[in-house]
Length: 142
Image (cartoon, rainbow, N blue to C red; front, side):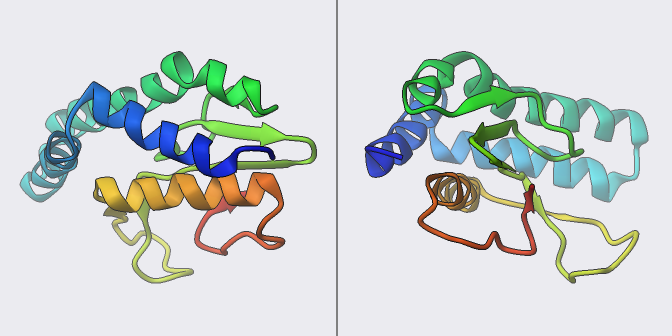
């Protein structure tokens, strides 16, 4: 994928144009608080708002830059995926969460902060570009 670093920088800059990193982190904190409070309605509302905020950047603002380097963007197929990014035979979904213990069923996932989500995006784009041959087992790649 040509201009990989430029695309990674654009992903970061675009998210920061939409809202500062601390505001992205506050969205995560609202979901954490809803989880801790145990109110399913509040959790559902906070989770949906959090996902929409991230997904709208990927699907509405970054579509042209992604398409410019041959990356298609479709809705995520996982509960905490931002979007499905695909090129050729590879696809990946940057995730907003990380399960603390691999293979633990029913464990509450840990919400990533802004920097961790950006690292997740970079890892996904590296995988799509072929700079990494094997995806991390913690990520949802196909």
